[in-house]
Image (cartoon, rainbow, N blue to C red):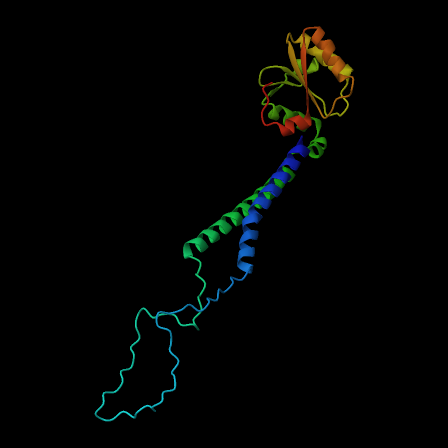
Length: 242
């Protein structure tokens, strides 16, 4: 279950990274491609520039009495000449701001994903796991299981019957720091549950052997419901209603 969660989170992070990289890639490509300069073809003007034609009569030298030729004044609405080129329309500032805003969002999402992943790995590394729980003493392991199930320890009399504690619902609890809990252990615990006049019991271990289910079936025939929980299930599940 823990490996499944890790694979799911890794896949989710890769997906989010991929989604976040798409706008960055598009933006980089749009910025890397130069905007082609559109050269306008010469457009005919209303008053094309007239090429001076040679006249038969040479231009007369203006006389002092003659009025000097007026210098044409530039007009506001000047017509483009044939040598003029059409400049590319600049990108509006609003679209550039939107692009930058999208890039900031994508970068923020990437940073949050990386931080969340690192935080998850850090907490997972510091939190309990099977390897650490195996190294605990028997009393420390029992205390961890009781705390995980919100239970309470058993009295000395109950402990003599093979009961290590009680769950939050008052069911007898047996805690085994072992990997191969089999049918014999289930039978003994079922007998302890019957002596305590209970009908339900919970046994916790690192693992159960193949014949453990036979012990569960035999207990059910006697009117007892024995629930088998692994340590990994306790680690993966936040809350148990037992």
